[in-house]
Image (cartoon, rainbow, N blue to C red):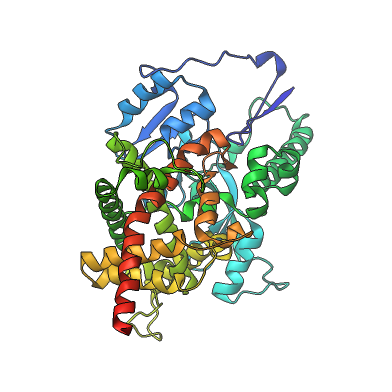
Length: 481
């Protein structure tokens, strides 16, 4: 008897040794990629059949997990470019206890809250117990030891923090493998249990930055950045997810992103008014020596958009952290409030929809918990973030630009001394250095272009922020006179 374990999908296969054949991995191209990828139009997701989950970045997945050449990857990405894909949080879920989706692989064990109209699902027994206790005042007794049922579930996304489990119906006879004899049943059960426990332990470890691995894999790059120590025992996927670009429902963050574009363009446009020597100093990475080339507009507009995208992620990260830190959670994002106020509602009129929103709030707070704990605040930075948020909702565009510049300047010109991670900007670089799909920290080669983008944005923003600060200080002096 031959037992194999798929580390990617967690699917076990057991068969007699003579029936197992090793097939050479196919070379995928745009013509035969349908053998590997499957688009589900009902849910608007693209699923890898080998791994059994939906993809967020097609190009990166094909490169990292299937070693497909760059030319073929570009052709494949073009092939699926016209397919609409939804964000993980917006993908509709199948109806409960429907048929399993074969493309997602084998369903896994989970626990379903038995409270009527609740529907909460978790693959962790401790989490489901905490839920029942907190939400339904359940306590374990001899008569009622458990307030949940065991179910089979699937999920479109396997990345930690993005799983949204849905229950599926699995017929009892589907659990039996016709290739396994009755005599082997005890051994099979034991081996599968060991594999399942090993996989669960592996998944838990993969979600955190392992300090022991960091100590044994100490390259000069990680020694220099200090990321492994700073992010130790934190959920890397959750941190990276907190710095994502706005979701479709985050209206004010979309406006913040648009204002960042205006700020960067305003800053770049102002470079032509400076002397070449000044721009050489702005371009220089050295305090004592000007750069050979002056700071200027990038020749490739796409490069400037990509560079601006890194500053957009930083601002989204900052605003999300400050918003949830005020206790407003996901619901406040929906109401565009940063102070937690909800005018026009009465606390004693909590209906089923309110309870659902509470669940969303709890999930939002859980996903951003590490970000809130690590994100540093200096001086008036939180206050400036609140002012920007209010301006995005209530003020005109010019005021929003001014508030964005003021908040950006507070990060750029902060003195950190020998405590680099006391700066939110330095901390955000560590978060930007997380490869969310691989759940690992980026090496120097994978991060250098991102660092160049952030440096470019801070350099051009120096022009507008510095001039603006000089005008404020000059006005203050004249007022005193």
